[in-house]
Length: 272
Image (cartoon, rainbow, N blue to C red; front, side, top):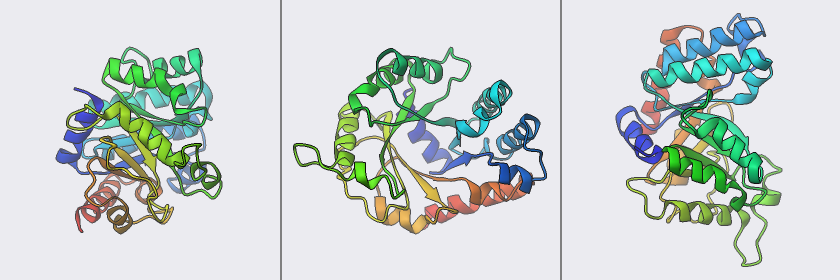
């Protein structure tokens, strides 16, 4: 199955929720864990135990693992492996973006099933040109994996680029959406190339009607986004994947508390 098809099925079976695994130093401390590779491992594997059997998508933030060097990368590999074995799709938040052979190497590192850090999908950035991401799109098609291209974010610096206009009058955000949509045009039931649009942007100032792919909507909880924002911004669009991190993770390290926090978000997102 393609990533788009797997994601569509996961949303139907487990609900539309992505939970980030973001082992901030402050969260490790809140859990009573050391800011070390050992603390990282305890944190990440507790998240997997609590969440992987019920959550559609788990999204480790690679940077919080990478700061511990090779030991952190080993923890990330185990986290990915164990979570996928429990049935969760794994979206690795790496936001890679480069050109030529370097982009190909990134795609091989994460989207090839034979790679040590193989995941279901990754986040990528298009600001060297969406066309520079072609190696990732080709790898996703070849291996049945996926990618989410950053389109619209709520950080104040983002608007300078994302709302700038191309020569044809489209905003850069719209250009990104349109080029992603071209990769999904014949996909059923859902394309495997998605976009990232923050749940805290205020208004979606792009046309998503032809996207035919998933939308990762980060920002629920600590960043101020709510289930009501998701419904207002995206309506009944298919493949919307709201994402929450700290508001669920701060319920740990208790397994039951983590599961209850995730279930509350799933229930909120079901209400309209």
